[in-house]
Length: 134
Ligand SMILES: [Zn+2]
Ligand SMILES: [Zn+2]
Ligand SMILES: [Zn+2]
Image (cartoon, rainbow, N blue to C red):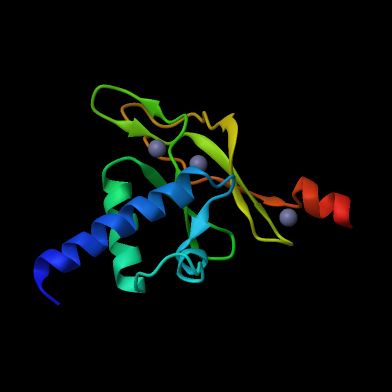
């Protein structure tokens, strides 16, 4: 395939992945995106797209308690002139494995002169819909 066609495919893939992340209430794993029949892009491209969104500060990566990486759209991330900060907590349901961003922020004491700019905190438990179902 000629390089400009590849590029075009990646650009429309990027738009689709961004739409999915933006409209999802939960964080999405690479697996979930790969299984989405609307996305016609291969896993390497999905991986590249997610990494580039992460570098651009559009999404953040959460390591779930199940050892998988999840990506969440950046909605209320703290922003300073030089840094895009992730202080909020996450929640992963042990039944449905959904990962969500919580409003609660992490604010823990650290040694003097240490700068915290990322808190990959994941609380585990049972989400409201699984709780109601059980
Ligand atoms: Zn963010
Ligand atoms: Zn659940
Ligand atoms: Zn988050």
